[in-house]
Image (tube, rainbow, N blue to C red):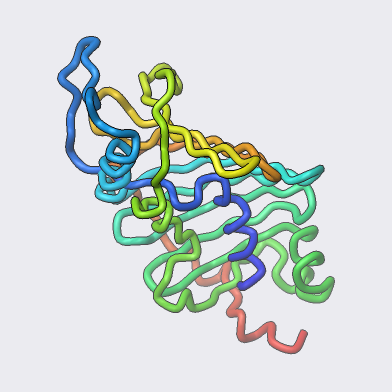
Length: 230
């Protein structure tokens, strides 16, 4: 599923090296919980909080030239995940990771682009099973690595879906990335916007919520090994 991992990387590119979060509650009212704190330190708190939340949902959209890819990723505590990805170029695909096993289901357009018409016919409407190698196919954990969140500047606060957020901006050459951190409750990253050669937006919800991800029924699964040589 190397091709699929590349697609996942493209979808998450706009938010790469972004998040993490722990406690740190707001005092409420109009008080600024980050008063006197540098943008880099705010990002570090957000990074730890988001990471410690364990579970979250990310919706993303990435545009490169005429190509656009959208995705929804639901990450459960422990690493199980499910994702839905839509690409103008590569079609529609779905991913499940349960324990050390990954499953993928895609439309005919995807399989013809990434494999062959023969495989597209064999796997139509079914999940393709493969070992995840102990790593989730929706591996977005590195987005919460705070060591990559440096050189930021805090700008005017904003709102994300009605929630107040501190806005942290990083500029590198012609690329600008804006990180939106919750000002109320735990300092989760709420949104990331990237503007450069590629443009992308990622929004985050459901931090810490219970997520139940189950493997597909055996009758709906074909082992990747059975497709070798086709």
